[in-house]
Image (cartoon, rainbow, N blue to C red; front, top):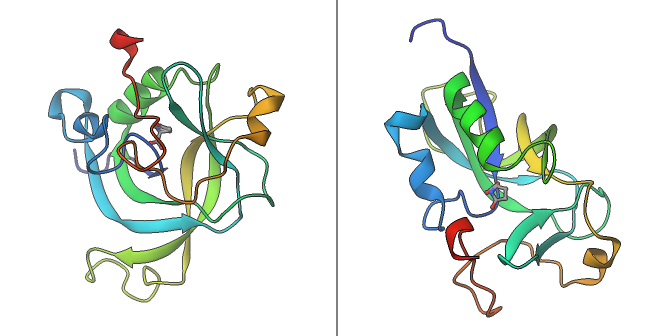
Length: 160
Ligand code: PCA
């Protein structure tokens, strides 16, 4: 494990704590994911719920929508590869690097001068450019919650 490269990943959808796919982040068989803190995208993006499965999509169109809320994880290669497969990357989502503003960092011991609220960190994010044009007319969320007030709870793959 020591010396293995870890990757920053920002999740904003079903992979967040309390959301339908969070169990992936805590499954040691799939690799390692360590929660580091909460953040929001430095740029604004449209975040919509679309498709049969009521799936959250961050449309890769910076400058419209909101600063999207999410969670920052440090993940190993194995977990990153699993997530790429799970998110049908690059067909449905593409994993790109985006700048994330830290809202709250969990561990004050790691790089205290850099990892504090208001500072930014580069993270992988699963967003999409391969969306239907009409998705841009859907309501834009700032913070995704499958169990929120939108009546569009996420439907997992096997139930679609
Ligand atoms: N899973 C990824 C992208 C959208 C989704 O539901 C995430 O939570 O960031």
